[in-house]
Amino acid sequence: MSIQEPTFTFGIEEEYHLVDIETRALAPAPAKLMDRCKNILGDQVSPEFFRSQIEIGTRVCHSFAEGREELSRLRSAIAKEASELGLAPIAASTHPFAPKSALVTTPKERYLELARDFAGIGRRLAICGMHTHVGIEDPELRVDLMNQVRYFLPHLLMFSTSSPFWEGEDTGMKSYRLAIFHGLPRTGLPQRFESFGAFQRTVNVLIEGGVIEDASKIWWDLRPSNRFPTLEQRVTDVATHLDDALAIAALYVCLLRMLYRLRRSNQSWRTYPAFLISENVWRAQRYSVHDKLFDLGTGKLVAFRDLAEELIGLVAEDAAALGCETEISHLRNIAQLGTSADRQVIRFEAELAAGETREDAHKAVVDQLIEETVAGL
Image (cartoon, rainbow, N blue to C red; front, side):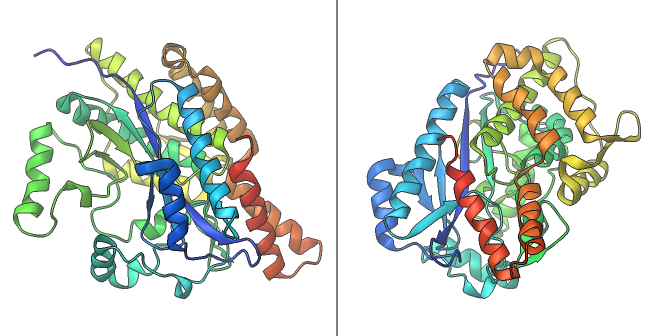
């Protein structure tokens, strides 16, 4: 049976924290902020689990020029409307110093139900992520590519890390967000599935048993979307810089196209046990771009900068075909200069070294995040 060639269209979802411009603390969004944003952006903006969060989603994008315009427009609109109410969005996966006791759940039935279900873990979910959907219209191909692209989830996470702090402490990790999120059920790496039918049967066990209503409550780091004919990656932190976000999305689309090319040649990327891939996810959470990942093909730890160059070469043909060579080339900048998490820690330590209090050092980190979130829009 022939497989329908994917469109490789894509969409990006980003979640932001809202902070008070004066105190730099998390701030529950007043109802009129959401009303204003919806008047401008329609269903491209929505509330999130806590009232101090807001989510945007691009339209279906056919090019990365379109993706850039969409993200820029959405970030700009949120920032403008928030500023008129004394607030600002920050594209970071955790807030540098907010205590979880300050969080207020959004009064929406779905979120209230989740809060009851998640109990204590739910009270820690002040985390934001970036999800990328890619159009893979054939469901069998969607699952086949899911099995293969799992290998690259740690690489995507490496480039995105933006959550080194939790409740005022430097956790020593670059993506503390994922450590929190993986405490929930139905998260982490998906298992390998032989077919789309096998995936559906597995999920239906929980649906028919009354555990979940539908597949939207499967929160794996990678999943077939329940709403769209897409393969959705959910492993990445939200990237503070717009250019970083676009580069990460471009890499994900290019990897899927590369794997599809292999399939057309009757080849496939070797699938590895989730146990081994999870080891690299941990290394990405802990160290990000300035350390090493385990190259499962050679069985050796390899400097991530070298792996980044290999990735860029691996998808060069796909980047040319998709017109995203600039975005893919930007991955070198991230690998060399670091991620938002690195910049946050550097700023915090520099402020302390200059004699600032921890409180003021944390505020300086928030100020940096506010600036970087809208830089280049």
